[in-house]
Picture (tube, rainbow, N blue to C red):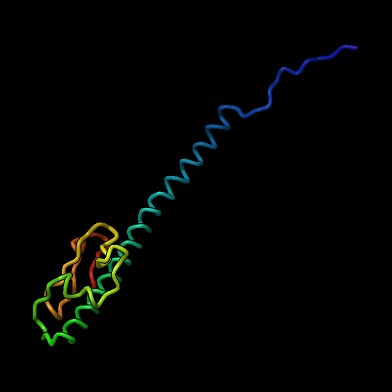
Length: 123
């Protein structure tokens, strides 16, 4: 009886591996820009919510201290009792790295990143 040896090994060919790598690369090329856009949008929304809280704290401060519209605010020390502070004991910062400013009663607080798209500012 004659036995034949099978010299072929089981495995993937180079072409099959290249096709799989190219498909993964294509999926990454589609997913990464969407992830970056979603991250920027969520940071903007968090910043706008922080600005709303700062605006509400400024209104409460103005009522309590008897300040009229146009009066100056010593930001952030005047607003600290009227806003929920973070674990560091300070007003929550902009998640994208901007800084907040609120100096006048009756005006919207601003973020230094208000020129980004999407803009970090109250409408």
